Amino acid sequence: MAELVFFSGTMDSGKSTLALQMDHNHAAAGRGGLLYTRNDRAGQSVVSSRLGLRHPAIEVTDETDFWDDVVQRRTRGERIDYLVCDEAQFYTPTQVEQLAQLVDEMGMDVYAFGITADFRTRLFPGSARLVELADRVEVLQVQTLCWCGARATHNARTVDGEMVVEGEQVLVGDTGKHAQVGYEVLCRRHHMRRMTRAVARATSRVPQTLPGLAEA
Image (cartoon, rainbow, N blue to C red; front, side, top):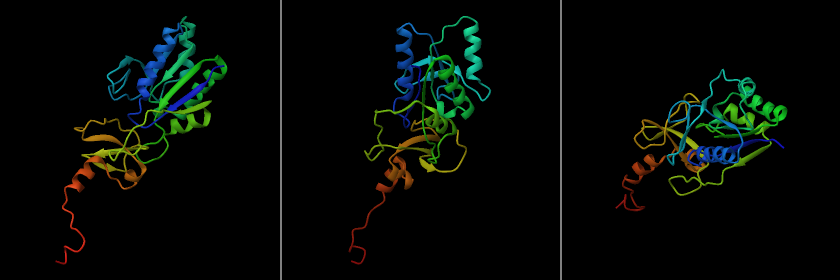
């Protein structure tokens, strides 16, 4: 029975690594498939993971119609049994509906990978539609950690190390420490406090006055 499965997790939870592994396993079993992505940090038309893995992929744009693309490819004789769709949070709700249609009408497995919420803790439209339509939603079990050691549950956007809560929803950056615009995973407590690793380090260097000494 074909399924639409949404694999969700924070940044650094291994989504792209699993997407590449999924594609490899199905191809090794003799199945034909397509690998899609959008706005990968390594550039267009590639799926890359933080472990250094990368593979060519089909770049999704706002004009991409998954149904038409698959029909045209099958008409040319391509065998397509499954789709692996990385960075699915950037897909439009209509495109997610097209993926569901491929599952229901063509019996094609679709495996989508993405972040659920943005840096403002708002759902991405594509992810929201996936949650609504997917046969299964799988939360990745690779646990990412906040700088404090607690389980990271939120994605933060940073500018020069400081967390920002305003701006465009889609702005591709990286988690590299030298990036001016970057992203960092935080626990809810520190996301609510806007306390990134850089802010925590700066705060720890401020001399703390012990109670009672100020009056001495």
